[in-house]
Image (cartoon, rainbow, N blue to C red; front, side):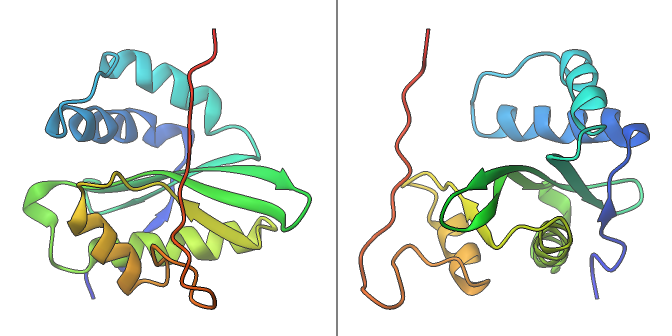
Length: 153
């Protein structure tokens, strides 16, 4: 299966993670700092207990970045900040393998919920997450889920 080598990233992977996150933002025309800046930030973040990344491929061509936060209702929640698969590696199951590794690592770290934010026009990502147990609507009530955000000064 593609992505069998999905694994927890280490600080040594910070440059590869930065390269892919930078490419992700460029692909979707989103502002991004230079790869070197991202690599420095990631070297610090990946050393923390509340942040982890999963990479797959050799060399890595898929990445997920996750932050963990406490939650009064769920104990701990894992937020899938980013999941990116390089274009040439898509449609082979590597994204599903990375997402499965995210869920396993988040569970190992005590998370009881996994959250992901998806932009409304990104229907491919919506279908992907729905196929993997992250629907746009609550399965019991049918109510749609939203993540709201505002920048702080």
